[in-house]
Image 1 (cartoon, rainbow, N blue to C red):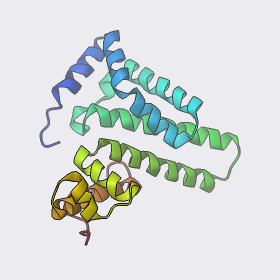
Image 2 (cartoon, helix red, strand yellow):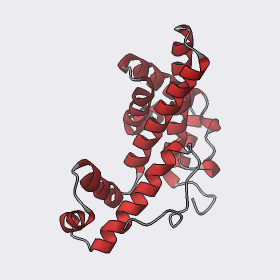
Image 3 (tube, rainbow, N blue to C red):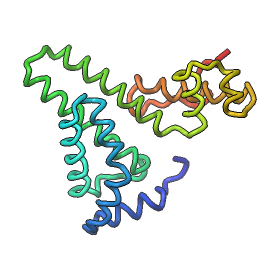
Length: 188
């Protein structure tokens, strides 16, 4: 975010929640429940656990809307962070209950966290980058074929793929470690 002012919708939503407006919670749930549930499911691998985490996250938002700090980023990112932390906490509790070694639990948490961050990054990236990655990596087209399918130049297709991959590579670095757009190696 380039300035300190949050988007108007985020600011207004926080105000509505702070004033106890139940309709605001419903609107927020409609907008972000699939994100929360998806992240939780990716970490836990369990539908019932993801449902529980989704309820817990929106319950927390309802009880503590003042915790959202717009200077830290958009409301969507804050909610995704809550979902991730709650899901990881739930996973740790479940794994500890099974009396697994701490190192095994932490490795599972790291892997699940990276996968959840990758999902969030892909769904949050601009549509042109997401489309290029889809064509190149899921449909196995090269950058030339991707350019033709997207109706862009080969240079533009390479640029989109490079930026998409740079964003995606941050999934293993952690939630706040985002590289600058020009910082990675170019695709050739």
